[in-house]
Length: 308
Image 1: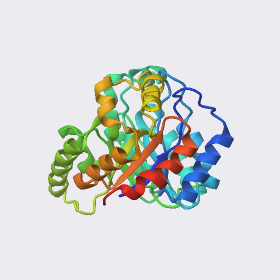
Image 2 (image 1 turned 60 degrees about the vertical axis):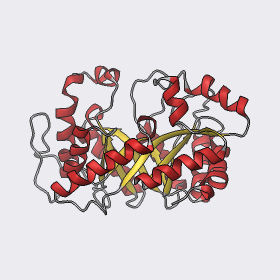
Image 3 (image 1 turned 120 degrees about the vertical axis):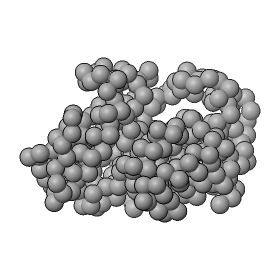
Image 4 (image 1 turned 180 degrees about the vertical axis):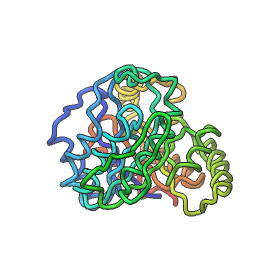
C-alpha cells in the first residue's frame, strides 16, 4: 500500500492558512517518503476552504518527486477549459507529475455560485472528461457534446504529458460503471466506505472493467480523505472528534467514529491493513490538527504496522 497526504485546505479550527505552513507540510511529506500530495476542491463550503489548484501550484517547488494529485477537481463547476488550462500549467511546471481525479461534487452551493443547475451535473460531468482529454492532446480530434465543445480551442503550452484522469465514486453501481467507462483509475472516499464495502465495490468494478476491455489487475485505485488524528490519550481523541471533526464533516457521529482513525496508532494500522486486503492500493491521509507533526506520527508510528 502506498501513501499520500492531503494538503490541509479545510479549516477544522485554528488553520493558519499561510504559505509557510503549506510549504512546511509539503516538505515534511516529501522528506518522510509520501508518494503524493493532493488537494480537494470546493468553491463554497460550511467552513473556510483554501482554493485547491492555487495551493497545489504554491507547493510544487518543494514537493520533491511526489505525484501532484487532485482528489478531486470539480470539472463541471470550474469548467473544462479553465480547469485544463490551470492543471496543464501545474503539470508543466512540475515536470509532468500531475494526476487528475475529477468528480461532479455533491454540493448544490458550488453549482449555485457559478449558475449551473445542480440537476445537470452528471450529464455535464461525463462530457467534461472527454473535453479535458481532447484539450490535453493537441493532436486529438476536438470534443463536441451537448454542453461543451473544444472545437477551435488550442491550449498552449500543453502539459508535459496528458495527465491520467481518475474518476471519483463512492461505490454505487452507476458510479463504478462510469469509472470503468471513462477513467484511468478509481478514487474512493474513506469516510464513505468500509473495507467490506470497498471489497464488494472493487469486485463489481473488476467486472465492469473487463466488460469495457480494460485490464482489471492493472487498473489503479486510491482511497481519499482519510481524516485522522493519532494520539494515545483517549480524552484528546474525544476532544478532536467533537470539537474539530463533528462540526465540519456532515456525517452521523456513529459513522465517523467507525470510519475515521482518531486515536492510537494500532487501530489505525489495523484499518489500513483491512483496506489493503480489500484491494486498496493507495491511501491519502489528512490530519485534522497539528498537521506537520501528525504526518511524522503517521509515517513513524502507523505505517510500519500496516500489513501489505
